[in-house]
Structures are given as structure tokens and as C-alpha cells.
Amino acid sequence: MSSKSKRAKEVDQSPWLGPGEFPTFENCNPNCPEEAFLWMYSGLPGMNGAPLPFPIEYLRQVSRRQWDCGARPPGSVIPPERKIKYQKPRNTDPHWLVSPGVWEPIDAPDRSQFDLNEFVASLSQDTRRQLAEALGFGPDVVPSNEQLVDGVTGEGPRGPKTGPVTSDGAYVTNVPVRDPGWNPCAHTVDEVLEYLEAVDDAERERVLMVERHLSKKPRKSILSKYPEVGV
Image (tube, rainbow, N blue to C red; front, side, top):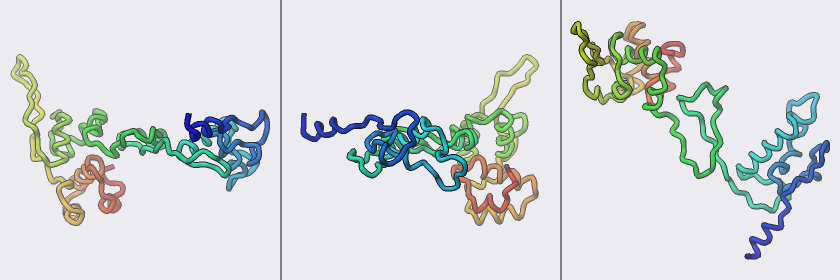
């Protein structure tokens, strides 16, 4: 065993804080991940009526989080090492109040901030129908995920798909019944704003719905001028 490994093994990482004790700098082990920062959480700014914001057991988890992020308190002899990283919620995740993101190992692959294919696949049936109509598909047409994605990226349909003919000669097709319409994703900010000024309310709603929900990078300079349109 190397002298470096021997020294690391001899470091005391056991908790010092006894049951019922209040955490202070002196009675918290600076080399214990779950105690290292406990003493810093007392009397936080804006607190009234309690010395600690949460129970000790929860604050131990907070201390561990800081430790795994690479932080070290005064007196610690263990070198900083970042073991985890924060990953923002995807656009397809639930609302930020219930999906604040995740912490993953530092070597985990980065999550894509927006995956258009994943977004389209996650849509509810009603939302899918609304967006399909916004892209120019008829109300009775059921486009595939690929066709919806291609409608946004400007690549066009991947080819018509028609369902089997019934005994009375009827069939279902997802071929657009009209031109998909003006696509803001294929134009500059100035061009989009100029177009929006010239069209009626229905077309403005359609274009902003595409920009807001189907653009890979919705442009705030456009959406901020129409905060309640295309929502």
C-alpha cells in the first residue's frame, strides 16, 4: 500500500455530532460528507423562530450534496472531487414545480435540452391534433410523428400513408389537404415579426403556436411581443 493510500485510509470520516446536539464548527467532522457543512445551516438569512431550517437528518443529505459537488469546509484534509452534476429538465418533462431537474454522476451523458422527436411523441392526442392543424394538416388527417417533425424542420412529408380501404370504399389518409402554410422556423426574427403584423388573428395564432411549441429554439424576441398568443 502506498503512503498516499495509507494516509487516505487513516482519515476519520465518522460523524462526531451526538444525538440531540446542535451542530457547530467544533462538533462537526470536516471530513464526514454528511456533517461537513451542517454547522453552516444555522441562522440562515431571513429565518425567524428556529435556528435550523429543516431537521438534522435532511440537512445531512444537503451536506452530502455539497460534498459530492466538490465543496470542502475549513479543516477538511480530503481533496475536492466533483462526483455529480446537475441536469436541467427537458422541455418534455412535467412543469418545473414537479420536475426541477436531476443530479447524475459526473460522467453521465448530458441530457438534450430539447429533442423535437421526443417532444412530438410526448404530445397528448388533443395537442397533437391542434399542432397538426397549425402545420396545415386537415382536421380529419392523422399525421405520423415523422410528418409532424418534418413539417417543423421544413423537410416536407416523408410520403403519403393511407389506411386500408373499407367495404364501402372509404379510407383514411394522413396526406395534408392543404399547403402546410408559412413556417416561422424557416425565417429570421425580422421576417417573422413583419409577417405577424400583416396577417389576421387566426394565422398569427397558428404561426406563434409553431414558433412556441415546435421550434427547436423558440425565440424570445418574437414570443415576448405576443405573450398570450399561440400558448
